[in-house]
Image (cartoon, rainbow, N blue to C red; front, top):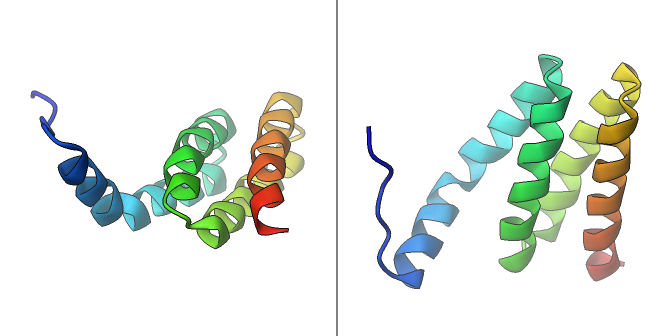
Length: 94
């Protein structure tokens, strides 16, 4: 299977917006299933897209889901990265 080719910025933006909710659900499901490392890594990557498009509330909401899972698991690495990502985007929302 070959990855999709998105030759223009407009096509990339359209693809990202169309798949945003799917990606958010994947992050939430990974966190709920205990895949904490995968959850924070996906959150970190998705936060750039969400923040860049102005979806601050979505970014912070899914960050809280990942943070709660990381706290429950006692995963210090996940806590650090998730807090840092939430903090960075929290500065934009006040």
